[in-house]
Length: 252
Image (cartoon, rainbow, N blue to C red; front, side):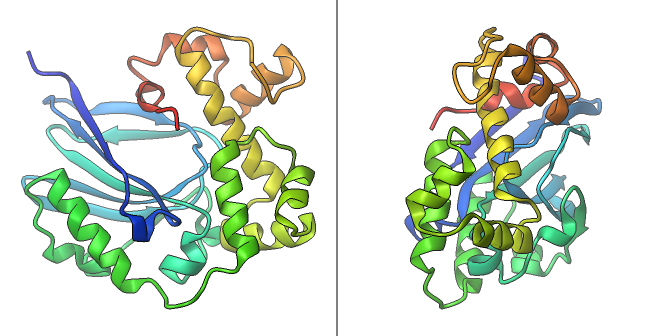
């Protein structure tokens, strides 16, 4: 019997690694609608929904701050790209703060998606990377912004905002101004989203007391519930149906 759904990920090439976290594919193999809840993961995304070798929906999402309900159409495939905080300014040449907690519909000719060969996930990613590279502005990333992105990727929220500022030699006020302009959240909020997302690794394994980053267990429970609407135990219990995203989080 076939699995109800199929999931794959591909990492970006060297030229895009500062802007793209990964490309992903979710395929609903059943004849019924698959409902799931997506929790904040600190990335914004470009997504295309494909059925019968045709793109039936194409959109960009802003950063999620709490859980969102999604439905995957029967026998359809969702393909997306997770984008990092440098992508708005240095790849897409636009902010995404204006679409935080929202979806922006894209024209099919954006990144030439209407000309894509949709025969396989690997083929789609190859074309997507080529198109993303072609629109990347020819400008150098300042050292403080590059250090910010790299440090946030490395620490996954397990660092205080003031320590981020100290390590990259950029004031907290300037970092907040930058993140609010392009992404729509403060540094503290962004770190909190990252910290909770990493905690899902423990929750997935049935560990309900945080290893680091939270004052105590009540604080841990409150923060997880703020982002997901559920307690850690409830998340763990529902990871095979409603919160299938938790099963796919990979350690860096």
